[in-house]
Amino acid sequence: MMLILPVVYFIVFKYIPMAGVAVAFRKYQAGKSIFGTEWVGLRYIGMFIHDGNFWNVFRNTVLLSIYNLIFGFPIPIIFALLLNEIKSKYTKKFVQTVSYLPKFFSTVVVVGMINNLLSPSTGVVNKVLEIFGYQSIYFINQSSWFRTIYVTSEIWQFMGWNAILYIATLSNVDTQLYEAAEIDGANRWKQTWHVTIPGIMPTIIITFILSVGYMLQVGFEKVLLLYTPSIYDTADVLQTYVYRIGLVANNYSYSTAIGLFQSIISLVLIWMVNQFAKKFSESSLW
Image (cartoon, rainbow, N blue to C red; front, side):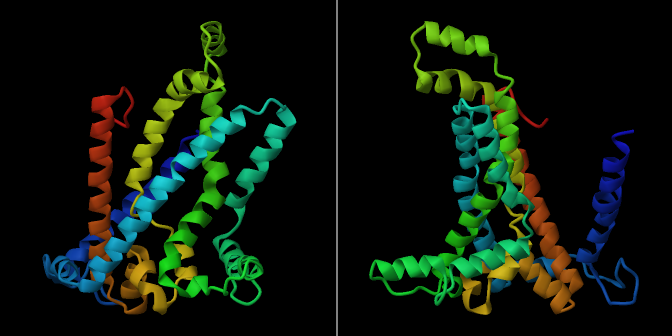
């Protein structure tokens, strides 16, 4: 009974829409058949391979995803480990609650907060810079700052929420292992390194595999609300490019081909990382 709704969700919103992939190989016209009116084969695949704009947004997506993975993936783990060291039950609950509240903020609210904080005239960040004798910086309108702003906001918004899984796993680590390590003379650092981290390592591996699979799924809403044409060179990513090509320019077949390419790359990445995890550890997705 509990599985009915999730199964229906995946069937309706995940599996049935897969039939639309046919549009990537056919010429689609609005008002005609959803599967296209003319077979064009790999025409659209060839278009994006030779499209300079596509490779620029693909590079932006990969770089943004790598930065987000490098900085965003370990921080929830570190946060969970630090939270686990807090002895006071009420303090721990308070910190944990405050940390995952940003997850429930809508993307529009988060972007509004970013704009207010980084405003060149009234933003707190620029006010602090002026106090120390620096000139105001128009962060939102400078390409060099976009990736820093995006990754930092992602860490702040999802750090506490992503740490919940690790906190739950930490609660299942056998306390007798800590007692045995303490008897052997292990301090808190050695207990963390030799008991805590190995205890949550299977969870870390699984979440890492899933994170790699979602590498190219950069948050569309936040990027769309943050970027402007003046910073397309670093801010334009696959999702925003597909949005402009498909919904703005009404080139549905071309945008579908790009989305298919993105899905294939994600599948290859998750398969490679899963094989690597299976070879060097006992944890994997399959």
